[in-house]
Image (cartoon, rainbow, N blue to C red; front, side):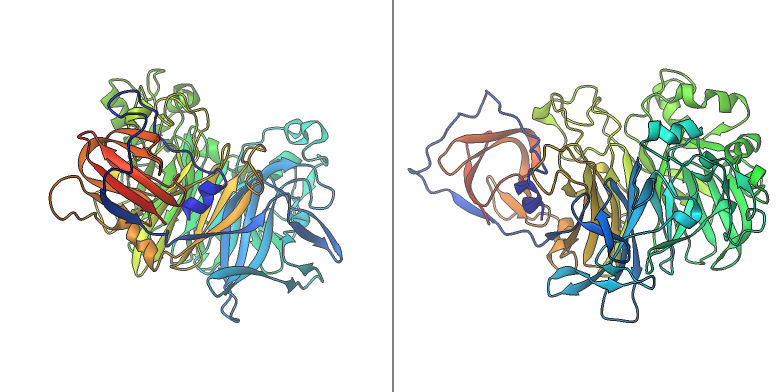
Length: 594
């Protein structure tokens, strides 16, 4: 799969053209080295939906080009037909659009499996729209914007998250390029008695979670009782009653909504997390009036709640019920949360431990958080801890010794169950290129998707398995497993200089995990002495039996890449063909890439 993506220019090899140890060329006709074969990847990639290229249905016999900036992916299973179900795609970018509606938005479409491929199923909706791709109509909820993350409930219900905090009507108007209607908005048909009939500023109708109907491609309600927050993501527990929510802000506060009745989210209690509280760590806050829900951050500070550094996506491990969220980090956050700390809010134990290790305090300008992490919350103990830290820390990122895995600013997060085993899926959205987030000299903030086997209780960066990356300029996001074999992924805002279709935001599927794809987690095995290579076709990696400098030469003996002090290398940039691999001792093996 990665080879297919690479053919379109999606990845670049992290290797250098060294000038020592390895000759620019080697003879290839006067010896017969041992041969290693890298089989074709068992993972297959398929593009499903291309932003700015595919048309969405906006009315009866009316369509327009879809919006771009694909982010969250929702999936709602269809139990009543042979089709798989409905896919919902967020469009994060705010723009004025007469047909789709101003702001951000969503697209809905249905998929089915046909042989080894997925197909988009033509539909006729209840409102008469016909086609394959449908704009989700948000007109009844006052439109939507900044559609970033979201929630897939345990029963397939879908919420979209409005992320970037909006502070004024002038900001959302954006000189006529954003929300052109900035008149006050009167809430109706939300099913929330304190909200219906209330008139609020247009800007105050943004930054909510909004439930949508993916089958009929219409919005249902803004979830005003969950509070106005700079939402990135959330997750609903298997009880279909407990909703975990987070803020993409510094400080970001961890909130929880508990419905009075499972499945009915129009009534319930809202809480904010305070890790050092006596008794329960969840402090109830008010959500019974518009005044209350418009001031969630103020209530959190007053409750002396725990502060995090940009909370992003949430996911719950179905095997354990533990909650995970990405804390993507901000390089130097001191100026962003010092005031809230002075007002009573508290730093998380994770931030305090990191600051202590740095010999400073989170409120100090010296405190850094370049790489972020994945945080684990255990509902049984109500404690948070760092599940895996990003990094490693690299003040200098020499391309010749760049690590095989470098996790930077995790953002998207989900779980995939493959053959009964749970795997965490982590997606990057790099905040910068300094401190080793990319090798020195590399300008593209290359974002990757990793998987982690949750049966291993001791996570390390080395145990992450890289699955794929995205084109120049793009963020990798939205990953959603539709079953144990296929993962849907979004490529968001790539460079317009990339070749089609990778110059557009797009949704693609990676399939084959239940068969050969599980080989991603195979441990290499070696038999005998001397220079040995173990190929992993799923990960597109070559493993060596010892750490060494190695070079790759083409079929004509010309040097292509040099790697320093490595025990494995990623060769997903190599096209099918014959190559030679040479180590520092001069040992050579022929490599056939199928």
